Length: 254
Image 1 (spheres, rainbow, N blue to C red):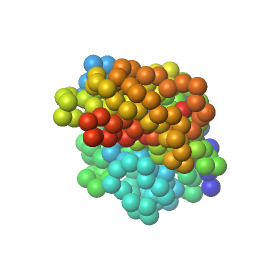
Image 2 (cartoon, one colour):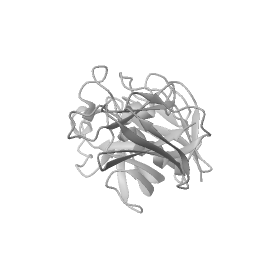
Image 3 (cartoon, one colour):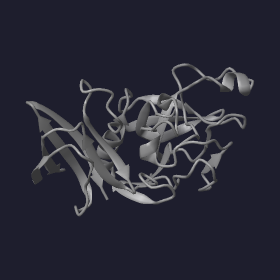
């Protein structure tokens, strides 16, 4: 059963099944939440979820939801794992975890920080549990095989298929600035929803494949920022090679 839940920004209420306990400053797109960039978002590891899952709600427990994992896009959870995801008791910076048993949800969750055991005056939360934060885009809309919400653009309702969403997660997680030439030099970032690739300067061979592995284009490249436009929507793999080394990145064109 698909859930009517709607993805929302961390500053405002949205669908009736999704309620915010309190607001806090955070990334306003899903891709930024997976890879928040300093200095706007210092301590990036604080924002990044540990697991991104499609799950079905099994039941309620206090202010938590018990769910069964249907699909894993990132993290160490496995399909069929049953976990407890804590929301807000009214005093924490988390989403209220509501909705109906049988709803399908797409959540980006974090390991439980156990804050409810102190702030809420309870002892329910366990280190093996998870939580649903409010400080970013951690709750996406899912229905009929389509994932939607502000994936790249704040306030937008952007949609991809579940298959494309897996590539999107990989692309967003792999963005960033390499620390040195010993690090992976190929980076991907999204500007106005369009992927821009960049590499440590130097002559490179650049290849783009579609989701079926078919060659879209091949060209020489000097590593300068390159915005990928004029392509049909879908999931792609960009591959850059230099000096016998090769780097791959997944990305989404929409």
